[in-house]
Length: 215
Image (cartoon, rainbow, N blue to C red; front, side, top):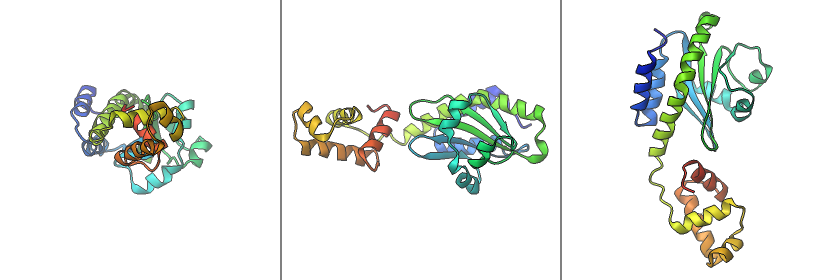
């Protein structure tokens, strides 16, 4: 059967401990018809795909402006070629898009590819209903498992102070005056933050730490 029992699915998702387990679970839940592929699509600082989506589709979906889409849609949508904007953004035909209410800077959706010979509207409605219920549990599992890979990030009190002031738009010199330390020391702490968060600049470090609740 293409839809597992809701309780069974929720228990499965709540027991997951890694992104790999989440990926395998989504693949297992959609390995039979009418599913062609499935994924959890998340965009924050970058784009992530969790599921059994073909590599070619990840490149194709690179143009999908999921954040703008969420501003316009909050219910599941069945895309069968009727929306020129989705077509222009590389969304494949016969795809169900299920927006997820997220935290912080994340924008996320469950995306389900449906076999062309099984696009009966009654089936689509049942699938949409089922995955809409599960979507928050899937996102919660993702955040729980993804956070486990970043627990090693430990910021000192001074590093957090510098990042917080940087998030307020203060320059290194302004922070040095506020914190009563040298500008060189401020830059030293910010450089540590960038290195610890594996960021390319202070703005990315700020965004990552805000998402993770570190500042």
